[in-house]
Amino acid sequence: MPTAGAGRTAGSLVVALGGAVAFLASLLWGTYAYLYGFDARPSWRTAAAPVTVDVGLFTLFALHHSLFARTGAKRLVERHAPPALERSIYTWAASLLFIIVCALWQPVPGTLYRLEGAARAVAYSVQLAGMTLTIHSASVLGFFELAGVGQVRRARRHMADAHVPLETRGVYGFVRHPLYFAWVLMVFATPDMTATRLTFAIVSTAYLAIAIPWEERSLVKVFGGDYEAYRERVRWRMLPGLY
Image 1: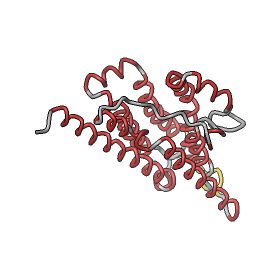
Image 2: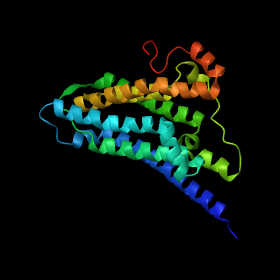
Image 3: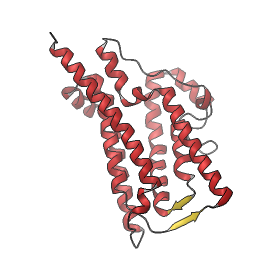
């Protein structure tokens, strides 16, 4: 006869798997919005209002990370959900907020450039490289670990939770946050750079750059001296030669 504990862990796995689906859906929706959806929306006459709205939207998305990082918010989650679901709840929140951001993103009037011929092919190649790097980096870290499914699986098996091992080889020996580097390649290498896409690229990249120091503090707490040594060896955070 199933126990109450077994029911709870089964429910946790359903929630975690749903979070993984939401995570993937948010990435696909964001890709569609950036490539096609933004162009289909009627543009404002001036840039000030839509840029203000867009910055506000992404700030809302960024705030959830800060809230989850606070001890009080973590304790609130732990009071209402199993500890193994903490990462999944974060994933659910981030995914839904990113979908909202992309759905409500306001068009900014103007087009900076449209590449043609060989230049257009080069731009698409750089974007493709960014997508390939994203898939590779996510596979190294583990998609289900990123989405919070791994934590629930270990809890179901009564295994101690474990952080993803510190990866320092391959592209991680080139830049410390290759997923963020890949993001920069994808959003800035478009052959059709409208003011809407440029606003999205600048605001989202600025958020990643600001978030890195807080993220690395957590990594130091987890990996200690190993991460400190890695940070000394690999100088660049996300943009080789710049940051």
